[in-house]
Length: 175
Image (cartoon, rainbow, N blue to C red; front, side):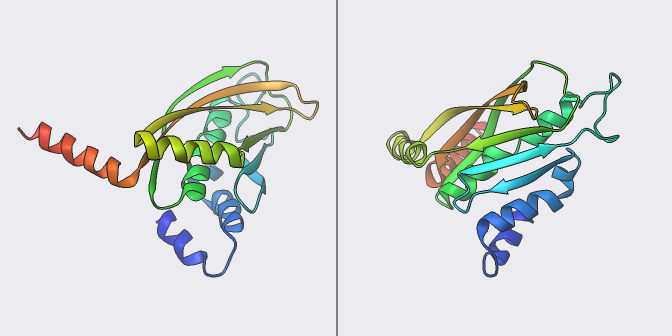
């Protein structure tokens, strides 16, 4: 649904606008209590905000760790899907969460890719057909104190290679 909706909306809006409002209106993302507050036109930069409120307040009165994790979880994957385009497959593979201090106020997170990172990634995928990459991001408060750190592992493959890999796997399980 999201993919076909995005294709349709690209006729009328910039991808960055669709990305920002699509996330903010999406029921699955709204439940995280986060909001995308900034998205660059090339999607290489995304900034989120999580306000402390009754929906995400835990027993101790701070932002629930699950809200932080769910707010950060889909960003890198969908960012890469949009940046790389239809010839690639991108999946979240793993995440390591480290909570450093309680989130007692509004917190922010930034997701960044440089043009060089994207070019290196494409080169590696074209050479190896599939790669895993690691990205680290921090949630910080207004004073730039690190509240939580998330180390994400993403899987990227050429779409044709990935489809063939799935087909081979299916054939092997049917033997």
